[in-house]
Structures are given as structure tokens and as C-alpha cells.
Image (tube, rainbow, N blue to C red):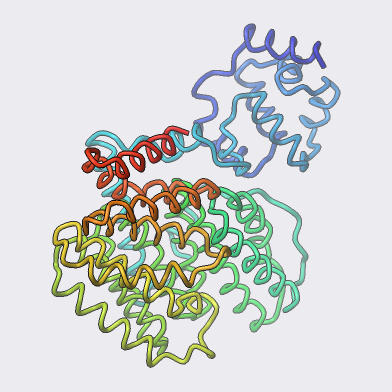
Length: 461
């Protein structure tokens, strides 16, 4: 083992892989599909010898030779060792989210150019969403251009309803992990499941089976988008949501189309782009109304209210919150489909509290509406909804600080930090920023100062 490590260091010194090698389209495609033989062949073209590849990856030269001849590498631990040895960001191979991947795949959010690029991407996705929602053909020229292809794993030549149910069951289980532990905990597993499930589209099956498969894979792509969003991989999120839209439309499932648009709108709210978010919510509202699902309409109304609150339009925000509650009371919860059934009475309270929290930051009078709604939501969320509970605790603490109840605000804020420490989610950190700002403003108070110091340590960890 020591000799292998020494060889690895020697190989890096004698012939480092060119810095731009991993960014070339052919290499990125090979990495995304985990075609290690293609990766090694491309490295050879860059002048890296078999001996050097072996030293860097900890493999024998005979192993490298077999892989160059076409032997597949499937084991996760071997793939990660190869990625780390060669200096490949793991996310390029769909193996894990890490800081290096976030910087290289997503890019820095700083600077005017990055903002302009993101604005262009938002408009492109909005145009795609409008085409899908308003009835344009799917699987057109843009299909498949959103992100690199996933890894390939053999799939059956013919599929039945049992195969589709397996995809649905995996999606339910992975979504539960996302709710409880955050997207960083399960995103790799979602992408791995998707890489297998996507190939089922090429298998033979009855029309009924294929239609249900479209919907199942749309839901799985939506989860991949959501977990990517939660870990800060915005470009990946956009790509998965675009694919989810196409598949949901192909499966003629309007509630799922509405759900995907709602989720992408949430990404834009998080990026402080409420105008673009509102457009997606409004497109989602069209699909929700076509579906006849009051529950889907309720979800979209609540999120439109959030967008209006961020835009400073208090009247529209409050009006849409009222409509959301009315639609929820009319909804037939027992017959709701799974991708909208998540929106319970607790979530209604959570959205009421969230919208009034945004409004309270400009007009503290709104704390009297936010605090009771958020309290109700916090009391109702259990450990399986740890991330949502953390969001609500953070918002509740913020409102108590705004209301002048610093002692209680600091106590609730401490609970929010306790919950956040067990969740792998960049989004949780971002959603706690308002609490940090309010605590910092009140540093002359001992309780607020202690909370500010704890938050500082939390972000530094």
C-alpha cells in the first residue's frame, strides 16, 4: 500500500493530467456515463501512460490494460478511487456532491457575468416550460441538451408494471430520505436510480406500461432536480426539471406538470428572482386547473403569494394566501395523487407563516400572523420532516426577534440550529440567513448575541 501511495505521488509529479482535460466535451461525456475505458483512452491521447494511470489510481498495469480493452468498472468504491486518484471532481461522474464540483459545474455566483448567465438560463427554462405547458411537442430538438447523460446500467429488454412499480417505490423511499436528512444525503442514490430507470424507456412494453413509466420517471427526475437544488447544484436541477416536464407531458399528467413547475419556481425564489418564479407558478397554475385538482391549485396559489411578498406586493400576497386556503378546504385529499399529496394542513400553515415572515421584514405588523401559523407548523412537523421543521423554526425565531421577544427568539433559534446540524442541505443554511441578520442587529442584547455567535460557528463549520 505504501508503494502504491508513493507511486501515486511520483506519477503526479512526473506527468500531471492537463488542467483542461476534464472539461473537454468528449471527456465529460465519458465521465458522465462512467465509461472508464474511454476515459483512459483519452488520457493516453494526452500523453499519460498506462503506468502513470496505474500509479495514480492504485491499480495494477494489467488492470488498466484490461479496462483499456473494454472491461467495465461498476463498483462504487473503485470508481471513487479512480476519480480521486486522477483528480476528477466526483460530481462529474455522478458519484458525490462536493465543493470542487459545485464550483466547476455550477460556477461562481459572484460577478455581473455570472448573474447575466443565470438570467439567460432562467429565460431559456421559462421558454421551455411555456412550450411544454401550452401544448408544444416534447422530445424535440432541445430534449436531452440540459445535462450530460447518466451512467448506463443494463435494463430489461421488456418491462411490465412490476418494473414501473419498482421505480415508484424507490422514488418514495428516496424522497423520504430527502425530507428527513436533506438532498446531500441521497442525491447520488437518486441519480443512480435514474440512470437505470431512464434506460427502461428503450425497453418494450404495453402502451399502458410505457405511459405509467413516463410519469414514474418524470417524478424521479423531479426528485433529482429537488435534491440537486438542495445541494446547490442549480444547473443540474434545471436539467432534471426540464426532463421531468417533458416526461410528465408525455405521460399526460397535468398535476405532475404543475408540481414540476412549482418546484422550479421555488429554485428561482431561492435565487431571489421572484418575477421569474411567478411566471413559472402561473404556468403551473394552468396545468393545475386543467387537472381539476384543487390541491394542486392551492399549492400554486401559496407559492404565488410568496413571490408577490418578495416583490413587496402585500395586497396580492394576502389575497393569494386566502385563495390557497379556500382551495385546500375544497380539495379531496383522499384522491390526491402522490406528488401533490405532500401538501397537508401543516404545509398550509407553513406557507402562511413563510409569506407573512417575508412581509414582516418590511412591516413588523405581520409577525402577529406569522407567529401563530409557524408555531402550529413546528408543532405538527415530526422528525421525518426535519428539513421543513428547521425552516419553520428559523422563520419563527426571526419573527420573535422582529417582535422584540429576544429571549424567546434566541431559544427558538437555538432549536433551529440543533435541527440544521443534522441535515445535509445548502438550502437550510441559506434559509437561515434572515435569522442571522436579525440576531446580528441586536448584538447589544446578550441572548441575541449568543444566538449570533452560534450561527457564526454554524456557518463556519
